[in-house]
Image (tube, rainbow, N blue to C red):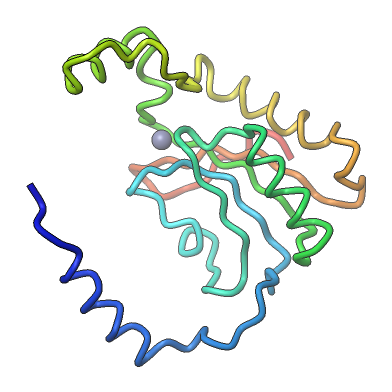
Length: 166
Ligand SMILES: [Zn+2]
Protein backbone atom coordinates (compact mmCIF):
# COMPACT_ATOMS: atom_id res chain seq x y z
CA UNK A 1 0.00 0.00 0.00
CA UNK A 2 1.42 3.44 -0.88
CA UNK A 3 2.60 5.41 2.17
CA UNK A 4 2.61 9.00 0.96
CA UNK A 5 2.67 11.50 -1.90
CA UNK A 6 6.17 12.68 -0.99
CA UNK A 7 7.87 11.43 -4.17
CA UNK A 8 5.33 13.25 -6.33
CA UNK A 9 5.48 16.44 -4.27
CA UNK A 10 9.27 16.41 -4.50
CA UNK A 11 9.00 16.05 -8.27
CA UNK A 12 6.48 18.89 -8.26
CA UNK A 13 8.95 21.26 -6.61
CA UNK A 14 11.50 20.49 -9.34
CA UNK A 15 8.80 20.98 -11.98
CA UNK A 16 7.72 24.33 -10.56
CA UNK A 17 11.31 25.55 -10.44
CA UNK A 18 11.75 24.88 -14.19
CA UNK A 19 8.20 25.36 -15.40
CA UNK A 20 7.84 27.47 -18.52
CA UNK A 21 4.02 27.52 -18.54
CA UNK A 22 3.63 29.48 -15.29
CA UNK A 23 2.03 32.78 -16.14
CA UNK A 24 0.20 31.39 -19.19
CA UNK A 25 -3.41 32.37 -19.54
CA UNK A 26 -5.90 29.51 -19.62
CA UNK A 27 -6.91 29.65 -23.26
CA UNK A 28 -6.06 26.97 -25.83
CA UNK A 29 -3.36 28.63 -27.91
CA UNK A 30 -3.67 26.20 -30.82
CA UNK A 31 -7.48 26.45 -30.70
CA UNK A 32 -7.78 22.71 -30.10
CA UNK A 33 -9.89 20.64 -27.69
CA UNK A 34 -9.47 16.88 -27.35
CA UNK A 35 -11.84 14.40 -25.72
CA UNK A 36 -9.95 11.18 -25.13
CA UNK A 37 -9.60 8.20 -22.81
CA UNK A 38 -7.82 8.19 -19.46
CA UNK A 39 -5.62 5.35 -20.79
CA UNK A 40 -1.97 5.85 -19.77
CA UNK A 41 -0.78 4.85 -23.26
CA UNK A 42 -2.21 8.09 -24.68
CA UNK A 43 -0.24 11.36 -24.74
CA UNK A 44 -2.92 13.74 -26.09
CA UNK A 45 -0.57 16.67 -26.70
CA UNK A 46 2.35 14.65 -28.01
CA UNK A 47 0.27 12.64 -30.48
CA UNK A 48 -0.86 15.90 -32.14
CA UNK A 49 2.46 17.70 -32.04
CA UNK A 50 1.14 20.14 -29.44
CA UNK A 51 2.71 21.57 -26.29
CA UNK A 52 1.36 22.61 -22.86
CA UNK A 53 -0.83 25.69 -23.29
CA UNK A 54 -2.01 24.67 -26.77
CA UNK A 55 -5.11 22.58 -26.07
CA UNK A 56 -8.01 21.78 -23.77
CA UNK A 57 -7.90 18.10 -22.84
CA UNK A 58 -10.91 16.27 -21.43
CA UNK A 59 -10.36 12.65 -20.45
CA UNK A 60 -12.68 9.95 -19.18
CA UNK A 61 -12.89 6.15 -19.45
CA UNK A 62 -13.34 5.46 -23.16
CA UNK A 63 -13.02 9.03 -24.42
CA UNK A 64 -16.77 9.43 -24.72
CA UNK A 65 -18.83 12.61 -25.11
CA UNK A 66 -20.59 12.44 -21.76
CA UNK A 67 -22.60 15.34 -20.35
CA UNK A 68 -19.54 16.65 -18.50
CA UNK A 69 -17.43 16.36 -21.69
CA UNK A 70 -20.08 18.42 -23.47
CA UNK A 71 -19.95 20.99 -20.67
CA UNK A 72 -16.17 21.24 -21.19
CA UNK A 73 -16.57 21.63 -24.96
CA UNK A 74 -19.14 24.43 -24.66
CA UNK A 75 -16.82 26.32 -22.29
CA UNK A 76 -13.84 25.64 -24.56
CA UNK A 77 -15.55 27.01 -27.66
CA UNK A 78 -17.04 30.13 -26.10
CA UNK A 79 -14.47 31.18 -23.51
CA UNK A 80 -11.21 29.38 -24.25
CA UNK A 81 -10.42 29.99 -27.94
CA UNK A 82 -11.28 26.51 -29.26
CA UNK A 83 -12.38 26.17 -32.90
CA UNK A 84 -11.42 22.53 -33.55
CA UNK A 85 -12.64 19.56 -31.50
CA UNK A 86 -11.18 16.06 -31.76
CA UNK A 87 -13.02 13.06 -30.27
CA UNK A 88 -10.38 10.36 -29.79
CA UNK A 89 -11.20 6.91 -28.39
CA UNK A 90 -8.55 4.24 -28.94
CA UNK A 91 -7.86 0.62 -29.82
CA UNK A 92 -7.64 -2.02 -27.08
CA UNK A 93 -9.68 0.14 -24.70
CA UNK A 94 -10.96 -1.61 -21.57
CA UNK A 95 -14.26 0.21 -22.05
CA UNK A 96 -14.68 -1.44 -25.47
CA UNK A 97 -13.31 -4.87 -24.54
CA UNK A 98 -15.68 -5.45 -21.64
CA UNK A 99 -19.43 -5.37 -21.33
CA UNK A 100 -20.86 -3.39 -18.43
CA UNK A 101 -21.77 -6.72 -16.81
CA UNK A 102 -18.15 -7.90 -17.09
CA UNK A 103 -16.90 -4.68 -15.51
CA UNK A 104 -19.43 -5.06 -12.71
CA UNK A 105 -18.21 -8.62 -12.15
CA UNK A 106 -14.48 -7.72 -12.19
CA UNK A 107 -14.81 -4.63 -10.03
CA UNK A 108 -17.18 -6.40 -7.67
CA UNK A 109 -14.58 -9.17 -7.27
CA UNK A 110 -11.78 -6.63 -6.67
CA UNK A 111 -13.82 -4.58 -4.21
CA UNK A 112 -15.33 -7.58 -2.45
CA UNK A 113 -18.79 -6.07 -2.73
CA UNK A 114 -21.58 -5.52 -5.19
CA UNK A 115 -20.65 -2.95 -7.88
CA UNK A 116 -23.69 -3.15 -10.11
CA UNK A 117 -24.93 0.23 -8.93
CA UNK A 118 -21.88 1.95 -10.50
CA UNK A 119 -22.56 3.06 -14.08
CA UNK A 120 -19.84 2.40 -16.70
CA UNK A 121 -20.11 3.93 -20.17
CA UNK A 122 -18.91 0.92 -22.17
CA UNK A 123 -18.36 1.06 -25.93
CA UNK A 124 -20.06 -1.55 -28.09
CA UNK A 125 -18.83 -0.52 -31.54
CA UNK A 126 -16.08 2.08 -31.42
CA UNK A 127 -16.44 3.53 -34.93
CA UNK A 128 -20.22 3.73 -34.67
CA UNK A 129 -19.99 5.44 -31.28
CA UNK A 130 -17.35 7.88 -32.53
CA UNK A 131 -19.76 8.92 -35.30
CA UNK A 132 -22.59 9.24 -32.80
CA UNK A 133 -20.46 11.36 -30.46
CA UNK A 134 -19.37 13.66 -33.31
CA UNK A 135 -23.03 14.04 -34.31
CA UNK A 136 -23.95 14.77 -30.68
CA UNK A 137 -21.43 17.64 -30.49
CA UNK A 138 -22.45 19.00 -33.91
CA UNK A 139 -26.11 18.99 -32.89
CA UNK A 140 -25.54 20.79 -29.58
CA UNK A 141 -27.27 24.19 -29.74
CA UNK A 142 -24.34 25.95 -28.03
CA UNK A 143 -21.69 24.60 -30.44
CA UNK A 144 -21.52 26.97 -33.46
CA UNK A 145 -21.43 25.51 -36.99
CA UNK A 146 -18.08 27.25 -37.52
CA UNK A 147 -16.37 24.81 -35.14
CA UNK A 148 -14.63 21.89 -36.89
CA UNK A 149 -15.45 18.57 -35.21
CA UNK A 150 -13.71 15.29 -35.99
CA UNK A 151 -13.79 11.74 -34.67
CA UNK A 152 -10.64 9.62 -34.71
CA UNK A 153 -9.54 6.21 -33.47
CA UNK A 154 -6.07 6.23 -31.89
CA UNK A 155 -4.08 3.03 -32.42
CA UNK A 156 -2.10 2.41 -29.22
CA UNK A 157 0.22 0.02 -31.06
CA UNK A 158 1.23 2.30 -33.96
CA UNK A 159 0.58 5.77 -32.47
CA UNK A 160 -1.48 6.65 -35.55
CA UNK A 161 -4.88 8.31 -35.71
CA UNK A 162 -7.49 6.89 -38.08
CA UNK A 163 -10.03 9.46 -39.28
CA UNK A 164 -13.49 8.00 -38.62
CA UNK A 165 -15.59 11.14 -39.08
CA UNK A 166 -14.41 14.60 -40.07
ZN1 LIG B 1 -9.45 3.49 -22.98
